[in-house]
Length: 216
Image 1 (tube, rainbow, N blue to C red):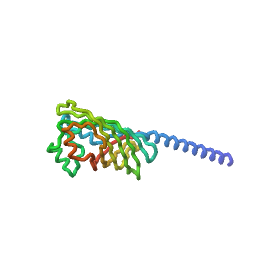
Image 2 (cartoon, helix red, strand yellow):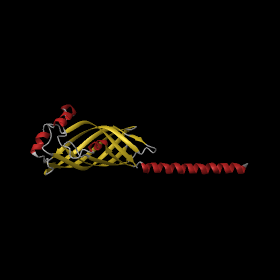
Image 3 (cartoon, rainbow, N blue to C red):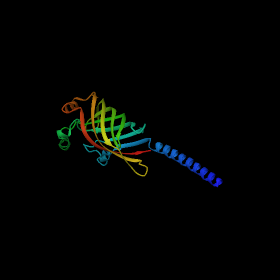
Image 4 (cartoon, helix red, strand yellow):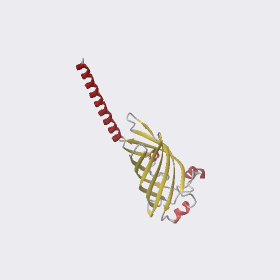
């Protein structure tokens, strides 16, 4: 009886130890799998197939982020896009109508490219707020894509959204969100472009977006 009892106790101790080691390994694996993430805005998919269209923004954007803990996420953002009219035209100013009519189109294009930093704070469950700071190099082009001038812009954006993870290991995710952006420093704008920019705001409010990403 004592031998059987000892065997049972040793077996339980062995099973407990194995279970603890398995949990530890699983926890470490999950931590490693979900420490980093890459994402991009779905809006860039809308440019595919537009080629040289006047209103093609040629938008490319990529985020690489690292999870510090359950609440805090930091990252690096790369973005480039081409503007055909001022960014400060609001929805209630008839933004979409002006795109259709072309009345506020630049006498060319503005290409903006930059690498910046992001901070994301998880607030409650999947709800989050984030801020992105993106220094940008500006290149002004005429309608034949010939360079007119270079400049600098400091672009910042403020986001509120919801993180939705899915898949077997919750490795894939989407983040529907709204964001507002402003540009405090904007230098060396050619006069013909500046006349159009000065008619509108140096910020844009309530842009809806959807980010798609993967964690690893």
